[in-house]
Length: 605
Image 1 (cartoon, rainbow, N blue to C red):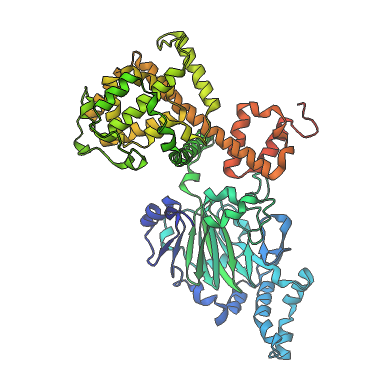
Image 2: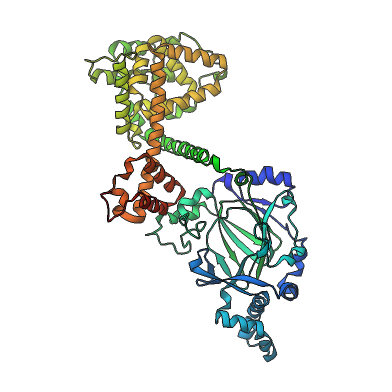
């Protein structure tokens, strides 16, 4: 099922231009406008059931139009290898339409000799010489009624008198208006358009299946350098999962709408769509450039790319963060249950003496949404005594202190770390590097510090840190400088953000003053937290790249050059693989690698 925020809007009332821009177009969400074009002259004049074909024959029958001749009817693929564009008189196509209408009668032997003779007129004979016995393969697609860029290509300009721009498009600078007409059932291949689009059904019925741009990896877009780069490479009716394995999930992201005569559909740029048209369906569409595309300048391309990469990185980080929390919570109690014995005897006794008989209090993930009583009136105290702590806070404090001492007791203490020295800085950099290499995204349950932090309400965590800063400052320092993993740093900074939302500015400033004041070197503490967060971001980036490798492996197997050339050591390689993976452009990697000079026959390069 598609996300609720991406659901197609169904509108009974036609919006004004301002409402369309602010409520529909700006959200890039498809919308159906019921009965939008029933007031057009074309709605009645073009209707095949009431003489519409004769009307069209009289108005534009002599016009030459470009038709699509499909080799894979009833599906019409965008790739020129799947169809041929041919010129023919519009009257010839009208003849095919009339023949299709009369065919059921002939099959039932109710048509007369004179009717058959009429259908074998000069125009139809001309079409037969062109297309043999397959007129059902003809489709009028994107025949211009109006075009700003190619006025000389406008073939049916006379028909503009019968249609009118939808009221909500009055302020738009249209790029083109096009006619779409089929004599028999047809289907367009799955594709997206580089323009904003309003599709209006004048006669007949269309079924449109829609996918958001975020579904690109499941639809396998054709290579960007190809003639049909905006089309999917997948036959969605019978996908070959050995070639396109992710296509199996594509329909989970799809939405289906039915357009009857008089209805219109707004299809935002970049949205994939597959259109099924019933027999003798006539439609008109309006294309215009979006404000985004109109405002993009070439000298800004590098900035746009960096901006997009940052957004994709943040999105991947959020996704991985939630996966980690789900995995970590499953093993949390098992891990944390072993940590209490690790605290020093004096600190454990100090905490237990103030536990007020609550030693058997069961702390678990369900407490993370439980704020301290009267949390909105929470007042920051510079000195928070242990006897003032609530049981959940005291329990969490005991766990964190125990975890620190459990690590310290087994660590090599022959080289104490001076956070202010160059040696200490080098030690931290080395530790960070090792953590990055050893961190495993699937093992948050083996990171008990991150588990404790993630399951505390922000204000409870605030009180834990205040108590540690006053009662166990060196333990807090060791926790931040030596036990905080990249995942833990990500959890911690998110908790800090939540704290900031729940406390007044004065209390926020006081908390951070007390928290960082517990460190001999406040800059070292900030550096440890921010470095860990950045390390998590790098891991998220690396995870995305790994997905790219897996996608390439799906298509090419381990014989692909990327698996045995040294190209992956370059930063450019990482970025390219990542972009190709997230956008579904796996074929681009082949071209890019070839440009670098790597090929299966020349791996030494």
